[in-house]
Length: 564
Image (cartoon, rainbow, N blue to C red; front, top):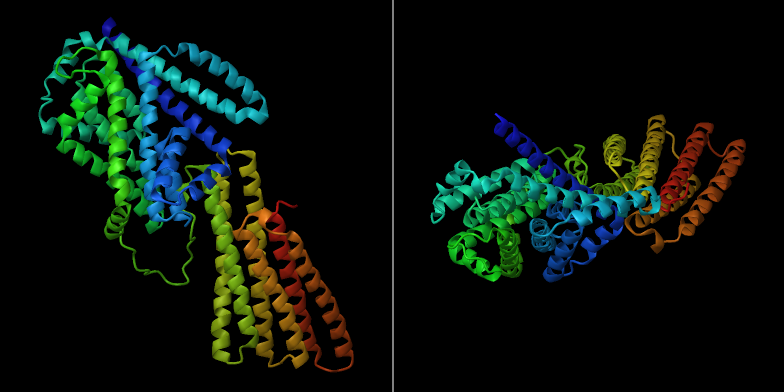
């Protein structure tokens, strides 16, 4: 009875240690992403000029954030947003697989070195930095590191407390498996894959494997089979994230799976010679046994050799991999109605990395700006349309576009609210506030376009017509508004420091001056009976709405420049 209670407590300690390990790595990864902020996005976007730099970028970023899943999710998000090509994404994912091997080396260190002396100073220094707000992300990173190291100390202690090397039942259980059989290797590979898919943490499965091997109860061949399964299982995260994304994003996630499956296949073909070679590098003899302190190092070495050799083979076959995933996931023909609402870049299930999710929203906001620009172009066409049937059809399209802008505002705002619930850097919080204002003003531009169309519809129904002078003046005012919208779109697509906000203010000033002149001319013309009062009212309504549209454009640009 007492032994059962002891085993229960040790098992709970083991599970708690694994939970602490996953939590510590998550804190550390998120803290590094916040410290890097936009720089991390720029690194991924810019340092992928060719397959080699893309691979090195993936390696370095994953070593930094200590999570291949985080790097892969970022990459899938970038592909979804159109910032990375599929070929670039594949090379980054290859590098991420190399970078994640650092985790195994850190864990193997925890079983061979006493990390206690590092843990407590890290906690103390971390809490001091957290209370100093300007360094709180560095403090979060140290806290995450301390939790990770503490969990490794606890796992090592749990392994020793379980005393598995003297447990006859456990020893006989693992001894019952024929390590020389490929069927056994395949079975453990499947177990590693399934467990990793369930717990969604390759680090946790690696920790369990190292624990079992370090006690000597799990033969190295079976431990390596579990590691191979973990390599396949870890691809589940990116593939789940990409389920609701566009085709290119799903192809990038599928390429991650194919990369690891290809590696597992060639390793299985040469399994025993390859494992023996890795063991000889470390100085471990699998046939002799013993030397359990070297087994964590053997696992880390295998993980490293596996990913480096796999990358060295496939880095030259990126175009072939791209063709393969394109063949497996062909572009689906659009069967949806052309007027059906759908966001282009945002997929709600990609909100796993808040700093990157903001980039999705920025791209969608820019697409929103393009939409209202096209909508105003439709209004300009409607202004000159004389055929009643074509006029009605175009008016209905503008009406539908206005409904789309309402939905875009709601969906982007909802997405930003979802993102803002996470722990974000101050810079990212400011970006979210700016985008909230941008989408509100963009929706107002859509409303103005619809009001202009309604005014033209009223003119059409009344049978009235603008004079040649009125038509020319409204064309000039529309041209200024169109210029302002084009300038707004340029600003939204680029970086703030690349543009001068004074150009937008100059256009707005021209719009205001023209409005004042036209309104004054209208009063004189109506008093002189140059045209009907009804025509004058419609004319002024157009002028006022165009001026409001110009103001909304300025508000969008000010929001993008961070002005209130």
